[in-house]
Image (tube, rainbow, N blue to C red; front, side):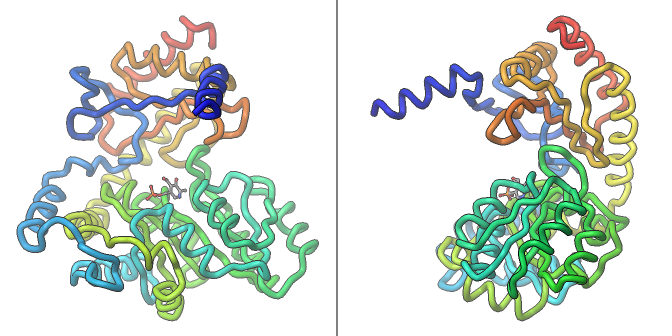
Length: 387
Ligand SMILES: Cc1ncc(COP(=O)(O)O)c(C=O)c1O
């Protein structure tokens, strides 16, 4: 089909062509790409649990007991007792009355926003919200009012300008490509003062932020003050699946209304067993979060000294802004030659002219490994005339 070929050519011409890098081994701080062993600096496996033996054992045991496929959607034949256990465990972890599982964080965002909002609603959405929130907002048919990224004055003005009975603020907790944390305390304040609903997608905060690792609501000490908390089990928790945590009535409502929940086969027993186990690990191994935070602080300071444009972030997501898509790809390739894997993130995932290397740290990266990366970045940056 000609239009496809033309589109792909255009994507290539603009330096935006995407290709897979296939992993041929387990994912930890090192991984294998073909036969090449690389230091992985670009995964959301923040706590380095993807290859944890306890999680693998949990998956294996669940397969032996329950088999592999879920066989149907949750409302037909796909609800296992494990799903119930996990939903209760997530609610307990997030300190809410109840929780409901979705197959991915993407599906949770789409499901929630389309279940609550329709054309009578006004949705105030941060300019850098994740694609799944944006898609949910669009699909809902609601009026979407985008406010400047984390700009509370802009949000306040827009709330005043768009009056209506049914209004909601929807935001990422931690922004996936910038790594900064939404000012949730201020968002909640504005929402309360103006009688708006709050929806927070804490995909990157879950398992990482707060003393107990439960996410940005705990980080800001906002227990019971955010109406709808969304999250994913696919990042720090090293598993798969999205969830929504909130009141019992919200969860019951979503069971009846969220189409991405209703019309999709349930997560498999092995996946659920992994999530159950990793939640226990997150609760009991605070040292992983502590080490991640130490690594983050240290690495960010050192990275700034190199002279790159690094965005200020207080999470393990550290964006190194390059600008041009071609240059970002070149830097990523140069690092790969040095056995360091950091993905280049380009439009449309990030705004035009802000292509970047999205560096992410793990709790288990050692100082020596991080120094190796800094040195690699320095050499590659100099070779390419970027610093
Ligand atoms: C902020 C945010 N929300 C939602 C998602 C989607 O989660 P999942 O990968 O479980 O679909 C992601 C990442 O993929 C994300 O970064």
